Length: 198
Image (cartoon, rainbow, N blue to C red):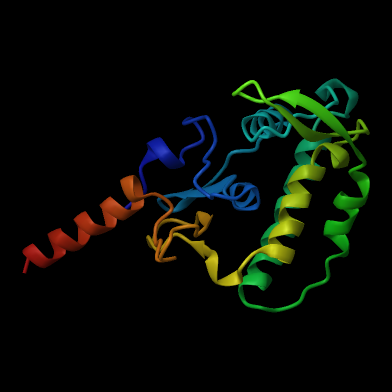
């Protein structure tokens, strides 16, 4: 049964944020809608919107890059992250040199801002206007997952038509679905129909 177009189709912006970890949401910029794949990133502007939605506020303006450069680098980071996170889940070591390229390009400086409650917080902002540097905080989230994360909590939705990832922060660590409202309910409804059709 196809997943809802509302939650997995590119037309349904903002982007999917069900991963409960920035590295998981990076992987979830690709999804499946029935038999076809949906890539939420088709332009530099898509990547910028995704970064802004995830509060990764880049210093650079998109005009400082060649057209397609940010998109190309973002997709390269996503590919590296998928390989490393899949291996991490299987408890296999992988070559991390490609991830380090993104990490080394991310020079940052402390930045004082006011949060939504009017309190001061220190964040970090990129000190370079390159595509790699803009993606640095995302690469850092992948690195932090590999260093501090629990591989048993890195999961993919159990719905057979879904490929979305999430970090299971539930108390009992028994989360099975990217979203109970979509995949979980659809799977349970399908099982109910299957039982009652006999």
